[in-house]
Each structure stands twice: as C-alpha cells, then as structure tokens.
Length: 447
Image 1 (tube, rainbow, N blue to C red):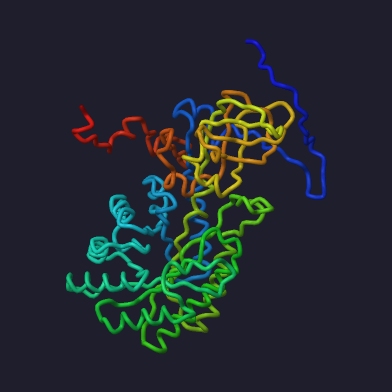
Image 2: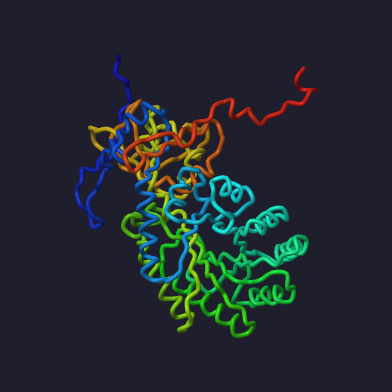
C-alpha cells in the first residue's frame, strides 16, 4: 500500500521531562477490562461498545454500605434509577439490598417490573401525576412532595382512595457552600418548609414522616454534607418541638462525585475526589450536631454516580485521523457525544487498546457526528493512532445510557462482565428498524 502523504508541520513533542507541575505523562495501553481482552469483546459485540463490570458495581455499593454501617444504626441505600436504569445494573444493586429511587412514573414502573416492591421505592421529582400518586399510594411507595400544587394533588388522591398515606417533603437549603438547588422542594431558611408542614397538618389527609434534601451534583466538598445534615437535624427537632411531628427518615439525596474529571478542574478526579468514607463521616458529624443528642432517624442515601460511573468503559475504533490547522492531531472515532453525552462535562480518560509506538503529541478525539461540537476528548497527549486502532474511554457508567440520543448513528450494544469473568449482552444494539418502529405515516403521505 502506498504510504499516506501528510504535509510537513512543526509539532511540539513532549518527551517526559519535568516541569514544576510534575512529569509529562501519556496514556498507557489498556488491553483488558475485568480480565476480558478488549479485542475479543469488540470482535464479539462490535464497536462502539459499552462494557460494565459487575465486580466494581458490587465493590462500590458494599463499600458504601460498610461505611454507613459504621456510623448509623439505621440506613438505606436507594439506587438512583435516572443515573442508569439498565435492568442488569439495577439488579446488581438490588441484590446487594439497595432500594430504588425514582423521579417519574416511567421509572417507578421500571422498578416494579424489575421486581422491586413498593415499600422499597422512593419517589422524588417535581412532576408526579394523579395516576402516579394513586399507584404509589396503593403500592406503599415512599413519596416525597415537591411543591404545594403537588401537595394539593396528593391530598385529593388520598381522599379519593379513602386512605391517609405517609409522605415526606423535599426541602432545600440556601446556606451551603454549593449552588442552591432551590428549584426543588421547600426552602428551610425562609419558612416555606415549615408552612408546608403546617398545610399537611391542617389538611389531615397525609401523615408526614420524612424529610428529603438533595443539595446538588458532583459535590467535591464533603463538608457541604455536614452542613446539610446539621440543618436537617435541626429542622427535624423543630418539627417535633413545634408540631409534635416525629420524623422517622432523613433522606440526604445523592451528589457524591465519581473519579471523573470536570472540564474546569485543574487536578484529575483520581487525586481530588473524596472517598465514600469521607462523605459519610461528614454526614454523621453534621447529624450528631443537628440532633443534639436526639436518637437518629433512619438515614437514606440516593447515591448514583459514585457507585456506577467507575464501573464502565466505552470501547471505540479509530476511523481516521487528520492534522488540524493549529497543528493538533485530530482522531475520528466511531463513538460520539450522541452516546457519550458526559463528554460535555468531563475530561474522560482515554487509553489506546494496543501497544503504540511513536511520539505522543497534542491530540483531540472527535466522534462520527456531522457537528462541530462532537468532541469526545480535547487537550490530551496521545501516541499516533491509525485507522482500525482501538481506544478505551473510562468512567462512563453514569448518565450515558439514560441520556444518550438516537441521533445520526444507532445506539450500540451494552455488555456486562460478571464477577466470575463471564460476559454477555445486557442491551442489544439498535438498528434502523428500531429507529422506524414508532413512526406512523398518515394516509395522505403514503401515495
């Protein structure tokens, strides 16, 4: 084959010397994932390909469970369905004792079909319908009320059913070192939360037994959870003192960070992400302070990203490469942001899946979409890649297979490697038939 000609350009080469920021490093080759050869997985299931590890999922949820058991006499882990509701992933967590945390009627139905009883489902979210609430109350689902209109609707549904269900209210906090999520729930500091409690007491259609608060996402400062727990503990004491309401459950939501690296982060996530134990210690310390000696209610955590993100990789094949005007090497992959939307948030780790030779140079990885924003990873030193080479993209388990798009290319196969080293499909790749399945062409356009 005739060698490809490339117009000569001057490219800065990083040869591993040190600067005040440390040694220059290039990605190492990753040829296996959980004992399965990358080349074999891609040969069997195609490219691109998501691969999940059952072992890592188990290890993460067990670590969180062990940390909670050290500090809280009563606790529950509620797996966040919106983070990844592939049934096989959910089943791994449910087998480890996790409940389901859902934010829509669709997710609630998904949990039911996965075999989760209503008594082990937490229903959050701002858009519950009357039908959703009726099903939830009948099945014993733990419902957290988000706003006054929803509260009124819940009272109407309860009256129609002739029952007095227990509910929680979602609250939000303004005095935290993180951006306020005041879109959701009732604010504690301005009195809205207390007003909601009074409304529930006056209505006498519902029984308040829990408080829920989710302070944000990808929280890198664990002390924010200390402040959250202290505030909820104090509010629970105020409810008991002023209204005789005994809170049985304090749900602290989720938001723990994974080992991914946000675009605006200076240091890599592997170096600065707090451990699960650090988050739990701060929660425990804050709750002790807030309750001031009172017995602790059941603690619920709705952890998602921190349990699943590190448990999956995306395998992709190089389609081609070119030189950009600024001298960087552009590598085109068969996986783009349509199946990896988290590339818009993170500097994902990318590794060659085979030994590579040549000098690493500044590179950017693009996907196959005909859009300039289809950037999988920018600003990375990478060895030369040729058509047919493979790459491994790390920390992709959270939000990708729930937020991916049926756009330009079909969504690919998803595989899980078992804790025993077996591997198999957990979601089939789509085809054009999948794309067309829900379309209906009216009669006047068929002729």
